[in-house]
Each structure stands twice: as C-alpha cells, then as structure tokens.
Image (cartoon, rainbow, N blue to C red):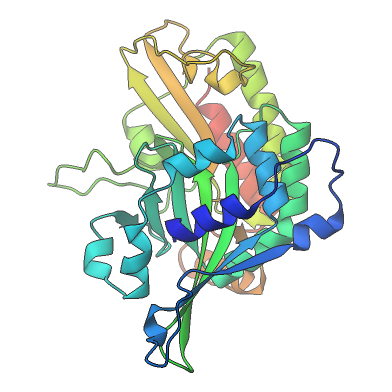
Amino acid sequence: MMLGIRKAIKTLHPMTEDIVITGAHYKVKHQFEIITKRTQEFDFRKSCYFYEYAPMIFERIRKMFYITNDDFLRSIGPEQLIGDLIFCNLSSLTEKVSSGKSGSFFYSSYDDKYMLKTISRDEYKYLKVFLPNYYNHLLENFNSLIIKILGLYKMKILRSKTKYQKIYFVVMKNIFGVDQDGSLYQRTSRVKGKVIDKNIPLKDLDWIEDKQRINISKKDLEILKTQLSRDILLFEQNRIIDYSLLVGIIPNYREIDMGEKRLLRFYEQDYGGILSIDKKQLYIIGIIDIFTEFNNKKQLESKLKQTFIGKDVSCMPPSQYAERFKKFIFQSLY
C-alpha cells in the first residue's frame, strides 16, 4: 500500500501554479502495477494494481498545508505493509493498525504526521462525488476544522486468475484527542470495572462525566464558532452525517518548536493548538469521520433506530444531525 503511494507520487510532474483546476481534474485516475515481473510460472497472488484518484487535486490540498511531495513520501513508509495485505497476513497487520467501530483499519505513519484509513466502497464512491465541494471549501475557508484528506487510493489484489480483492483507502493529516458527535446513545469508551486504554479516544458521555469544557479566549471562541458553523453547513448541504469533533487536551503544556515560520491557522497558532484562557491547557481540535452519506440505507437505519431505540441516536437526517452536533459542541465552549 505504502509502496503504491510512493510509486504514484514519484510519477507526478512538478506542480505549476498557473494550471487552472477544471472538472476533468477530479476524474483523473492513474493505474500502477506494483509487481510487474511476469514469467510462465508467475504467481497471480503476488500481483497488485494500485490506483490513485484526482492526483492534482490532492497535491493542491497538500500544498495548502505546506506538505511537499518529498515530505509526504518521507513519512508514509514502511513498504512491508503491502506484503502483509497482499498475502492476507492479518495477524501481522493487527500489530500495525487499529480497527475502528466501522470496521475500518487505521495505520499511522512512522512519524505520526499522517493516518491511513481503509474505507468502504460506498464511502469511496461518495468521496469522489463530494471532492469538488470539499476542495473548494478548503480554498475558501483557511481555518476549516475538517480533517485534511491528502490522497484517495484503491488497491486491486489478485488472488487467482479470476478472483481479486479491492481495498479502498485515504491518507489524512493526523489529529489527536477526544471524539464527540453529540449523540449520547452508547457514546462512552469506558467499561465498568476496567481501566481504559489511554490510546482509545473518549466519547460524549465521557466528556460530560468528566465535566470537560473548552475554555479559550473570546477572540478564539468567536472564530471557532464561526468556522464550526461553516463546516457543519457544508456537511448538511452534502447530506453527510456521523462526523465528530476530535479534541486533544494537553495539560501542563510546554512550548513546542514549530520549525519554519509560516502563516498559521487559528487552531494551530499556539504551539500547534489553541491555548486555554488560563494558559494551562493546549487544545488540538478537528472534525473527523466525514465519509458517511445519508443515503437510502442510512434513511432506513435512521427510521428503525428512532422507532426501537429512541430519537437520541447517531443516525439521523443531515439537518437534525447538524443541529444536534452544533448544540452539543457550543454548550462545551466558554
């Protein structure tokens, strides 16, 4: 998988600013065969095709966040992951990735700058539809809190001459923290009588139980509310649900060397985050899980859950989800 990304990035021509993005750029697909040596005794199980979608669009997005191709390639090793996937070596994979509630796998780059997430075919198809609006939103909203998607890919692994497996995945800029979507139904990571793994994000009920609040300056608060409202409106207009606000809280923070000076977004202005008003905590904030369209399947799920469980469930129409999400988050700000 990582080998495929490396091969795809290295084939791109240097980006020029005078190229005007058109609708055609969103439909570009590059194909690479990762294992190309074929003989009469060729083992099809060792053959893998790698597909990269809208490469120029995602390179432009990476440039928005000061990520060069060389920097990107430097961070996304190691290559042996592709071998584990091709040979279905899941016992090895579980040591390298974690599985979310959705069944997706996550893999972190060795320097923790990026996350690779597998997505479903439906999510992959919808992301291609959503991409133009997503890209334009990032262009128009410098301070957008939405997770930064840096690449969309597919692997086609041949298991025999007639059978193959498809894996869809994205590479995203990494965020860190506490997961909130506003629903309280089964929204806790704690299990009674067990010590919670510190690597597992806490959820809405955990946030309420801990009486957490985001305590930032009035100026930062107004910027945060304004940008959250804009980002939520994008999701509502594009019929997206199930997104969450990820909040990382660093107590007793220390100054972090940000390296090269550049124009910073408001949510990273204080050593990579937002300082609390008492300067004792650093908040890392972003919106994640943006791949779920409220399609026919989700509409049916919403009706069934609201009938048999109640109205306070995660799956609901985009306008209702947006309203609940906004209300819950704004109540956590002061």
